[in-house]
Length: 131
Image 1 (cartoon, rainbow, N blue to C red):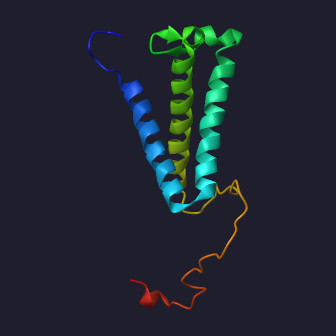
Image 2 (cartoon, rainbow, N blue to C red):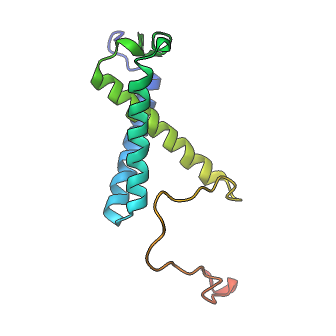
């Protein structure tokens, strides 16, 4: 580490991990199994991809901080996998929030079960009644 400074990229990676961890806890508290399993599967995929790539010939060309991915220890690779997956998940959330036409809609990981909420229009609420 260079002195006592903290670089921008690791700080952003930690921020993304914190945001997605809080989202995960919110999904769990709300009983949203789809949200919980989607985030868990994203983290697992991120970890597995980083662990796999770290074993390839290209790992020496991928730098994390000032070290190649191939020389990082298990815990550092685990952290990189979690933060890469969290950053990807956060980017996906950002794209969904600005996509007014829902063009990036994908099916949920789990089938929808239980009663579905009716839209205001289907429930007979007129636009003037919306507050």
